[in-house]
Length: 221
Image 1 (cartoon, rainbow, N blue to C red):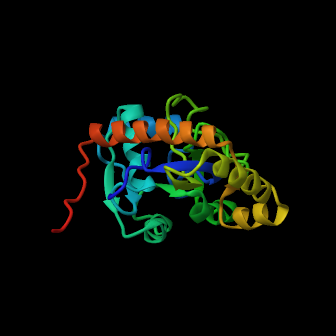
Image 2: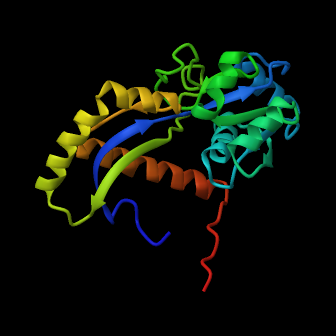
């Protein structure tokens, strides 16, 4: 990218969060996280997980899972979340670390079974599904957030004024409802809170990417 997320922006507020959900086909033999881990360890690379593009949350969710559990899964890449979920619905793969917005309808209809939420914190839109962290993967935390930022040289006074207005907007019932309809939970923050979150998350994902040997695509000259 032509910018540095941490150095080139002045964070104003978080706007929303939407963790991924580890989902399997209803016919899949593993009904719990421990069952799934046991199956994966018994036959390395035999379980297939569908993903979208390389480096996206569906992909990194699986990579983080393998690091956390000491297992080996086989990645089956698709163009996006939609085709990956369609393949799972057709029983062509065993699991997907799907976006909450893409998976919730299938979970509620019974067409997919949820094993766990990928964030450390429970997700209010599907509160009955436990996190993977609560089921034993204590360091597993993959959350997708939305936030708003200004150029790095923006006056702190302006950042404060913008933050006050944005926090009020994110607390409006109709805003919360529209975000929920798309699979996201409205979440606001102080500038300091979102700045600290972005710094920590950036470091965590960089460490994961380096550990799996993922390389950036060279820029075209």
